[in-house]
Length: 119
Ligand code: HEM
Image 1 (spheres, rainbow, N blue to C red):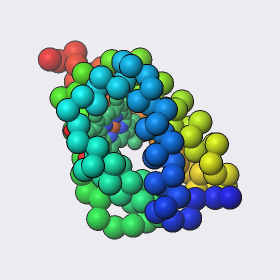
Image 2 (tube, helix red, strand yellow; image 1 turned 135 degrees about the horizontal axis):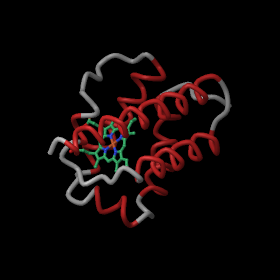
Image 3 (cartoon, helix red, strand yellow; image 1 turned 30 degrees about the vertical axis):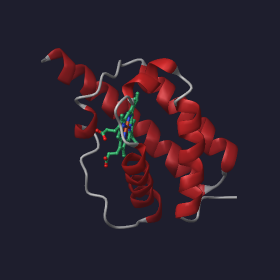
Image 4 (cartoon, rainbow, N blue to C red; image 1 turned 90 degrees about the vertical axis):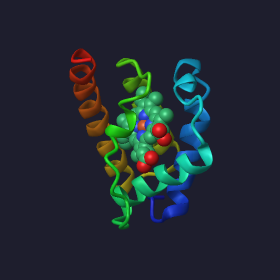
């Protein structure tokens, strides 16, 4: 079954966060984050990417600059995301989700190294 609506995206995000927050190092990056406002933002980001829903205009990279992320965490983030998608969905949108996440992770990682070097 492929991703077709917002509820499908919520399922992915629920599983993704359940797993991501089991990793202590990554969990600590989320200290002080209000999940009640964060999770709807993530769902609307992915709805924008996968369902062509309008409304998400945030610069996602900038949202991360202040966070204590170590470059090696990006691969872990990606693996957890890809595994969560694979476990729940198959098809064109599922492939697109993984492809977009992969591209964004590598863009983040290379931008990250530049931003942090010029600190
Ligand atoms: C180690 C990797 C990552 C960690 C630990 C992480 C953590 C976080 C945290 C803590 C926030 C909340 C920021 C805030 O509200 O101040 C956030 C926001 C967000 N992250 Fe990540 N992130 C990571 C990688 C990524 C990647 C690769 C993407 C690409 C899809 C992404 C997409 C988003 C989006 C869409 C938001 C919401 C921005 C908004 O508020 O509209 N994150 N992330």
